[in-house]
Length: 347
Image (cartoon, rainbow, N blue to C red; front, top):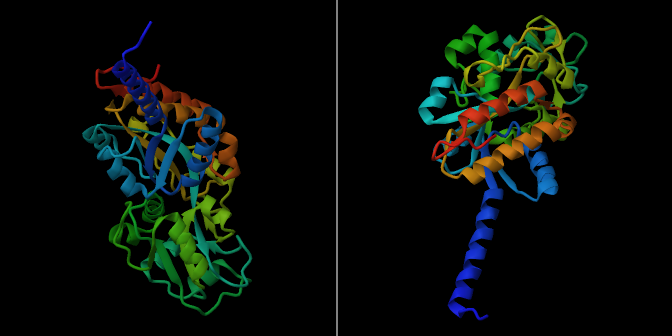
């Protein structure tokens, strides 16, 4: 039996194309929030070891993540600001929560023990409004008797990019300070009254570490990784709490994931042990998929993360989604995410 050489070349080319298509389906891309980037990186590394499939995630901020998924330049977007049901519908998107964590105030002050400095929401708001300008201001000193505060100016550090971490921070400040709500409000990007801007949680962390007398806000994994001095914050019940697994979990316990579009904001939750600046990070995907293989791989990755990624999440002080929530999410995938013909991608 003989083969025509042109047919052999065609067969080889077809095999290469098939292999490329399979690889393309594996190497999916996502972009967005820097808040969950440390855990997405850990999950992607472990998932690659377990399956051989690659997940590429770019930590570019929630605002850029929302923009990129709307423009279909990535397979999934990530945002710490959940989109409202009407906004999801208008953009042809669906969303689901992937992880929960805490946003924390971090300071660069000599001679103050880590975790010992106390803040209230109104004091944090006044610092970021530029009304409290020195560390030994009476409003801070009254909360911290016994701590020698320096007579130094406060350098405010905030995000320069559109950021879900900023949304969580500004949403919290809007709930505890009427003046903040009126003058600044809550969003991924606001007209900051004060401060030096850093890009990403990475940029804010770097600025605070470098500038003596500074204060910033970052997702807790960044504070922990960089051994930063984190402040305690008074919660809704009047208790001063420190950021840690238990206080994030206490706040997360009040979430109602059955809300339309799984829309949930977890700042200033009740409960004496709740960390008041807690938030979820959400994944955004198109309901009608132009690249069904890639979309199916995204869903496989997050199914794997729900089932196998809990320990990795806890090591970085994130709160993994409970099994009851992951079941709700997977049920939503069956109805919400389809290929061009209308066939469900998740069974």
